[in-house]
Length: 238
Image (tube, rainbow, N blue to C red; front, top):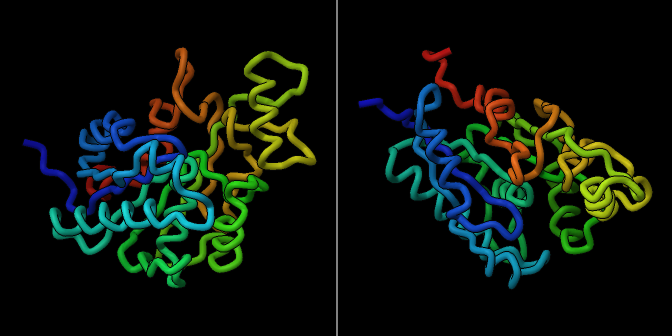
């Protein structure tokens, strides 16, 4: 029986996702060459729709509980965080040592590395104004030197106001991130520029979409997983 690496992965899902959406991610990470136990922060779609920018307490608590469970069940001191979309912002807030709206964070002590997948680092989203500003002002870039920071963004759709349906959708999504210049490349929801984290290992992957749909590959497609998953391959397997 394949022995799983004792340093587990904790997955923080994206906006309007639920924990069950990431079961396929868990299956892939449990298989060689990663052989990692993984745990998903138990955040529901209802949680996302009923909490606001200034009070992500539910999401922060769910991530903290998932990390505690991962450490307890594996005996590991630290975990790897894999964060999809808005899950990246939740992770950055939770890792930080400053309380966020009364929630005591400081999770950086338990993190070996963090992988952002289609996560906005800079954004003008009105529903993320407070949390984004708080994270960027207090923990800019690859803030903690002992943590490996990785940001991956797909280059799949050019936002165009009068383009295809997909390009128009991307244009409107990008316009929320960057109202002045939405005709940019990105994964259909998040732009390349928005996902760039100063000081991190930044990867742009051609053809990867924010989520998998209608045959379009997302962040667990082989082309993407072969890039960010490499950080999770034990040294003995490389």
